[in-house]
Length: 185
Image (cartoon, rainbow, N blue to C red):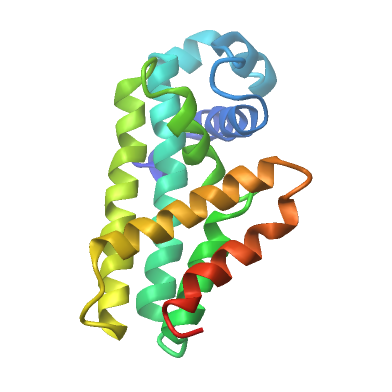
């Protein structure tokens, strides 16, 4: 069911769970805590989500859809931007602890083994992201490779790790600059 078709109560649970998962992690937040925080009856929760894994999957899908929308807008709608400006916008869209990528990034480390179906949402997003970045890089350099797109994603992931360290939070710009040097910054 698309998120736009969900009733208000289900959207409230989805919003609450995304907030709690972002703040405390997937393992420290149980169904009872989500139900209590969203002030939703347990029957309503299970009617819409059936399980915690399904809720995690829907939460990640919500984040993924938002990221895809933003990336497609940057790449295909904002035509006045140069390649480097597009890469910079995409980078800062992702390298943000308050942004849409934080929850999928957290899922990489927390749910691969415990919630494999929900984890697939992240895997599919990362494949899609690499293909979009690869195609974007090809517009400027016909010799661009998939490895370049992978490297860009690794730089984003590295920035997310640095943001989690209060002593290195200001260094995310340096990571991006290092990558962009090879693309003519």
